[in-house]
Each structure stands twice: as structure tokens, then as C-alpha cells.
Length: 128
Image (cartoon, rainbow, N blue to C red; front, side):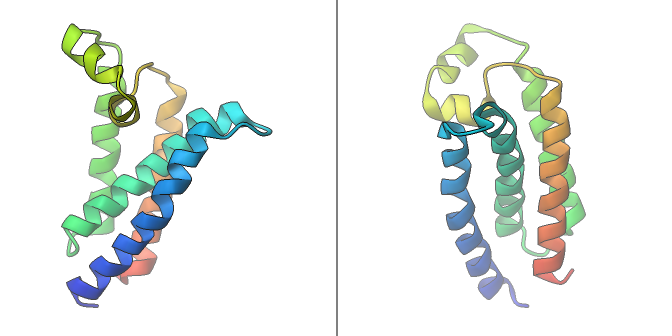
């Protein structure tokens, strides 16, 4: 599959998963705590896998998922650090969404699940 039609498909997948990811942060029904904190983390990883393959359509899905996992793990550890410039970023909705506010060991499991799903999705959908 050439890069251009593939990028269009990835863009459409991003258009589909982005509102679902935001909705998971605001869900108020049963298991709301899990959806708000952990399902959103899984969707966050899938989102970034799609962004990665959008910009690097010839990359191997494994390496996209690997780097997404590595970077988000770094960002999770960064939540242990609270300098004024990071706290200013975290006070905004986009800042909280992108770099988070509170360290949780459980996030790593959900990041791994999200990257696993992202890897599988990219592998199946891209025919790598």
C-alpha cells in the first residue's frame, strides 16, 4: 500500500479514536474511575502509535510501539518532578492530557496494553 492512501486511512483512524479518548476522560457511568484513568491511557498509546505511523508510514509497527511506550514511560516518571514550568503546563487541559499530573505504577501496565494493541493494529492494517 502506498504511503498516501495509507496516511489517509491513518488520519481517519485518528479522527475516530481521538473523540473516544477524550470521552473516556469524562465518562461518568459504571467503572468511571477505570475509564477515566486507565482506558484513557490505553487509548492515548494507540493514538500516539497512529500519529507515529502517520509521520513515518514506512516504519515497522514494532518500533513505533516501542518508542511510544518508551516516551510515555519517560513522561510518567516526569510526573514525579514538579518544577514551576511543568506545573504551569499541567494546569492547562492540554498539558494534563499530554504530560499528566500524577505518577502511578499502574499506568505502565495500561501503556503496555495500549502499545500492544497499537502494534497489532498497525501490523494488521499496514500489512507490514
